[in-house]
Image 1 (cartoon, helix red, strand yellow):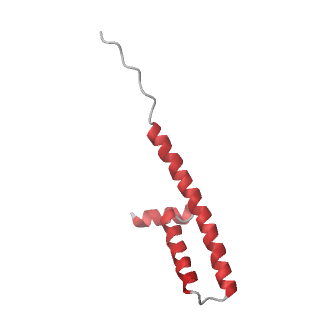
Image 2 (cartoon, rainbow, N blue to C red; image 1 turned 90 degrees about the vertical axis):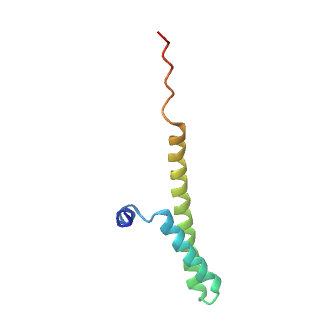
Image 3 (cartoon, helix red, strand yellow; image 1 turned 180 degrees about the vertical axis):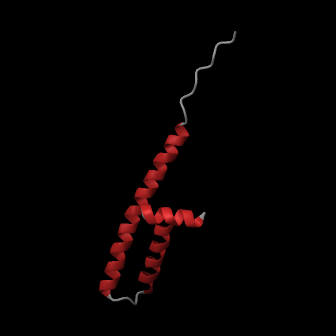
Length: 81
């Protein structure tokens, strides 16, 4: 199943968990404070792009959940015979 999720991610782009993992890696590297300025800026830019992508994925997931929560229209009760 993990392979199935990965192959889908490769086709559709990284999943939320992948983005979050990469952002955590970037934050860790930046917090060390030993990178050259240009590398730090490059990582910061990448992190900001990943955050935007993650926000987009969360917005899409929220929209899907809202649709599911609305559910099908309630059927009107049938009158008793």
